[in-house]
Image 1 (cartoon, chains in turn cyan, orange):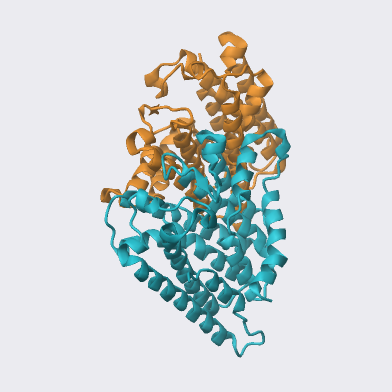
Image 2 (tube, chains in turn purple, brown):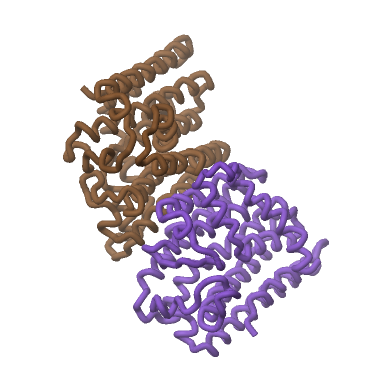
Length: 299
Length: 299
């Protein structure tokens, strides 16, 4: 199965299940759940759920067993965007081509909707139908990835780095935390859910790290050369916020080269997975995860 | 053992363990963890941890087994105060007699510190040393109590009720969610941790519900008759925010009567616990939880 067939087969049913977690009758003018749904449904590429579910498929596991963790992850990703967009933070009024939460619902409800999505994420995993041990591993990993030693540490370093000239190492440290941890979690979660052997899990997590950095480099590049319609948010915001970026540090050509290097490294990890499993009863086919690499290429 | 002896014996070691979860070297000018610690250490009566630990003691359990859940609960309570105090929410500059988080650290860091406390709360429970089944029960109950069908729903209803004349039923619905759920959780958690029999757990959870309402009625009364030094925050804020309150709905005398009624009902639940356990090998002594009722009395 190629990535497009997989997406067509899996993502609509995942999407439906994810939105159903909100569970309120949204016709009742109940603003909290409406605001949660608004940001959750506002599109986005669902790259994190796709990574999780495609990795389960790759490992020969039951893809549906990954829906809850994927939904929780997307809840957390969405909360982080709502809070990031607040006036006191990045002050963005456009996200994925739509007005941001605080523009539509006001700052107070945007703050609460973010808090609610974050909290419910843990409820979703805790209530999911996988083994107890696995649930606890996922809850622990998700809290670490999203918490003050993970994503929030990265957001904090990002804020404190504004207006400063960061070097490449400092910039990578921010990104490894700010976006990297939540891109690594889906691969880790898939390995837990599908009982991947440690050697395979190790390579897949490295793959996730390279994908994570590539994703951020690509984001920085698109902020310079992309257009609003394609990427669904205002461009040139990094420069406006005086943020250190890969193109700023490495030039645009250098940033594109760094992107290619991360993607090549990710591919090597997949080759290793293929090699490790080649003599097993079920050799692992890496094509889905290879195609995800291709999604991140900038021509 | 009376409540004061229990507090002296237990609370300082709990306090130390709770603050140790932040775990960073705070001399390094690392603002995120500093902000988390600041609000966490800013005092407060630790009524929720006290309820949890005193209930474990009452049930004859191991009090130390309740430290992690108590810390998680106080993390969540603290996050909710930080976000509640934000300019876009209640806009309070004073909390527990000290400047609020956004006054000291700025709004952006206050938002992140709140997010971080909330996220880490789940990590603390997931990493704690109790049985897997119990951990999952606690995580699920905590997420529900703090989430969009619990505390946040109450905060939302509170915001939407501002400037409206709520009736008593609407007011109680707000409080049952906004503060009640997080006051019920510690009792529930203690029952889970200490394997309380269902009949006892049922009475204790009802006790918690009455304590929760009493706590809120008391808070409303103190907002009218208290003084800043004693309660550590500005008074008259409810009226300033045009909020419906018990004294507003019932008069001050009526509110005091309602408070007494809740406390009397809580006491009856404790009597029931005593009665249920009177013939068992280990009759339950209710004096600690009785003394907590006394703490809430307004003369």
